Length: 141
Image (cartoon, rainbow, N blue to C red; front, side, top):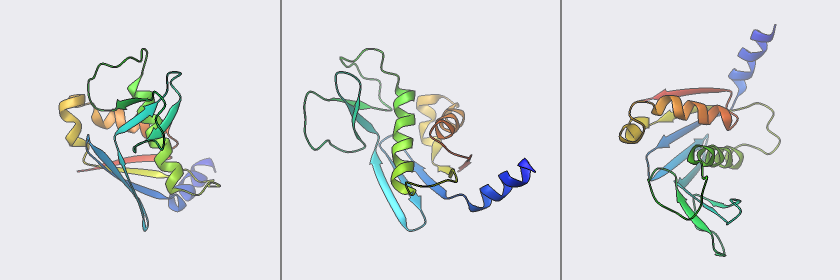
């Protein structure tokens, strides 16, 4: 019974296609499209102030580039956690606020991260998508 319900939910789940590269992601759901640069602004308390775009106001915010090794003044920044927040932000922007069915995420272009994740990019992005609320995750070349 539960397996049948999962199959039915996947049939009706929104399918979000995510074209990836280290500079920006393009998210597509039906006719909607959202392009986000791969950085996040946080404040000194590590509260996210802007995702993928410049904040409307600057108050000592720190720009964290998700896929660059950089030195910043923020200690204990976990970029994987920020990448999850990046994905959650995009999913929320594209799906309705009252969405009951979790989306299917379909990545494209993960091979562009091979020089960063050395072959683990599929596993990392799958984990990130599930943590961001995906029901299923797939990858295309």
